Image 1 (cartoon, rainbow, N blue to C red):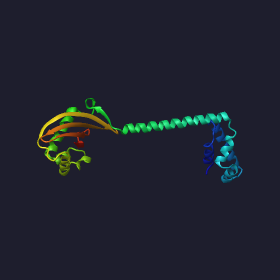
Image 2: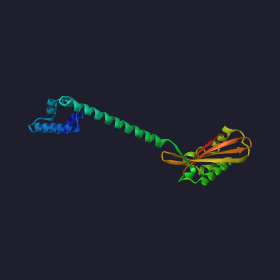
Image 3: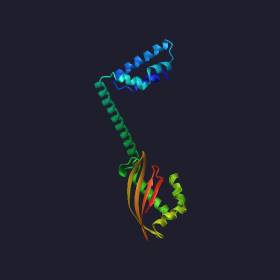
Image 4: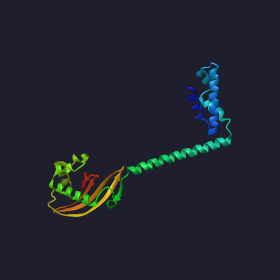
Length: 215
């Protein structure tokens, strides 16, 4: 252990104001340096002075009670401030991670008509079973879920026989922001001969399919 490490360990245990700590730090370093100049080894000096806790305890007995109280109050305020800052950071991180929605009409990143057109094309390709076309127009993470077999599975979970498509319902759009990444999310209900199906489709900023949910 060096003299600076020893002195810092002592200073860290003092219960007094900053100015008194600095003054004691200067005195303690000066005392150690003086004893080194007389030929004493650091280990011997530290042994004779006592542990950092013992030196700090002896000094703390000389600190006036009012200064100790003020130190305790200041320390409490510092701890509360640190905890509050930590909570704010956690809250900011949670807010950043949570999804937030914005009206698509106010979006600076998506054009409503283009997203609607992309949704209609996705429904067309889905109905026709054009898995390769869907994969080509999807983000890489989605492509494995758009195989011919997967599309059949999706249809069967809703109904065995949908029949021919009859009509497209209204499209509802929103912009979704999560972790600073933006998506366009839309829902459309499509009527078939034997069933009505609601599609929830998600697109990235390049209008690549990033999510497909059918119910």
